[in-house]
Image (cartoon, rainbow, N blue to C red; front, side, top):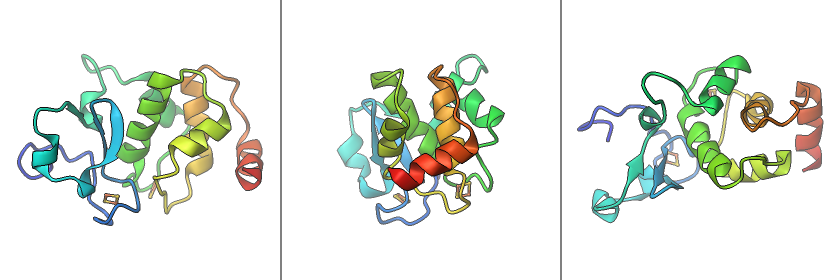
Length: 141
Ligand code: FES
Ligand code: FES
């Protein structure tokens, strides 16, 4: 995808199925692209982060990532966006626990998880928790 289709949103970081930076949707479900051979995806619908915006308009989740400043280096960001896109499609009103669960396979080494949870809550129209509340919740979860 990166070398031949020019779709550089999904990142190859660990290349061993541990970080989630390469997450794409395969027939709507998040998968680690680094753990799949191209032939396994033959005939199936692959969505990368480049495929979410419509006519130049970001999705509500992408807008919320911007609003909440939920990105630092950005390497993990497309993977989180794809995992949360899948969550919001099957559950438009997730709880913080649902959000943590949906991102269980994604790592952010810069520590933006509280803002990512806030972004997902904003995108779902749920009252946004303060960053302190999100951090407290994360310790309890
Ligand atoms: S690069 Fe695929 S999970 Fe880390
Ligand atoms: S923003 Fe840097 S790894 Fe997540």
